[in-house]
Length: 506
Image (cartoon, rainbow, N blue to C red; front, side, top):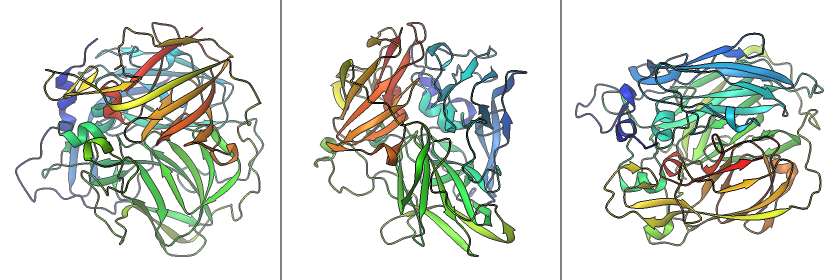
């Protein structure tokens, strides 16, 4: 299987490889009402239908933009799944290009995981049945075609998943979907002057650091405004950017109490003034909007870059890089969205729960049967004579690698066994990389040599590795050589260019 350059640069009608020359025809105007994706209850009685389609979407009041989405012009509906139930989903591809649908964060076997080996051809329908057996939490889905994940997700092929656990005790959390329980899919996008999406992946900075945009989009709207009831509101945050790390905080300094991470609820709320989310990570937070007025959610700029290329030491303060959203604060922070309290509208939740019933169980002490070591490196190898653009196993002259090897669809990197515990040491060779593992969740034992509390992080499936991390994993689902599991950097341009491996579970 080879990456098709046409898909990378164009991605059908949704993407534009270069800014249009015409100026003043389109403006990225903020302030639309927050769109709330429709929620679709998925069960075993009848299959839910997801159709990958081309569309026209309104990111602002300026006009419509060619996009892609699942069953709607941009992004997809929120899929609600139930623990201890079977979720049947028919995925129909009405696009001119092959896609996949990966269920990021779900613990399902490799044959329904939706990785690069599970391509859905144009006009075809994929009918996976997902046996859901994991704690309540927030996951997501997105295309995962090797060599084309970056442009396809950028064009809109992604959506959120909510896993509900009817058997779990009620923690008293906000649960009125779209009112005091808000899904927030945060992305950054670059637009041409005539309003098209510009996927600028050919420059050296974009190749090395991933594609970033200067406009922040939440649920498909540029810096929207959400009307919220007075009281405590639950925000389900998903960083669905291609590469940008988000450093979220409220302008007025109010607390966010984190109640969940990738793998489900934490044992108890954790108070935070700011929250870092790398691409692919999720977090649920409770925020008090008891006072009337408006609160502005901000993010600090992202300075993650390969230091050797920039002539500095990794971890130094090199400043923001590439295209950046306009700053609204002295430290360079930019606006993500605004949340406005609606007078006379109140939530049912006015106090924080002391503990969270239904939280994912903490790990049981277990000695790992084996240890593995992975080094993620954008400078791992030179691909002489390849020319510009993304190619299989390389991007321009650079090879994106894990342990010095670029991804190969025909190579199994290792095999493991179901029910066995492993300790993985993951190192970032030249910049911070969000590391994602399919098919399971892991416990973070340490970061940069410092122990990590499970109560503060919970179960994870994606982790930003700055220097070194130690992870404890166990795989309980099978994945064979026809549809293996992936492990990879979740900067999508790095993944497309070879910073990915695959393994089987027997």
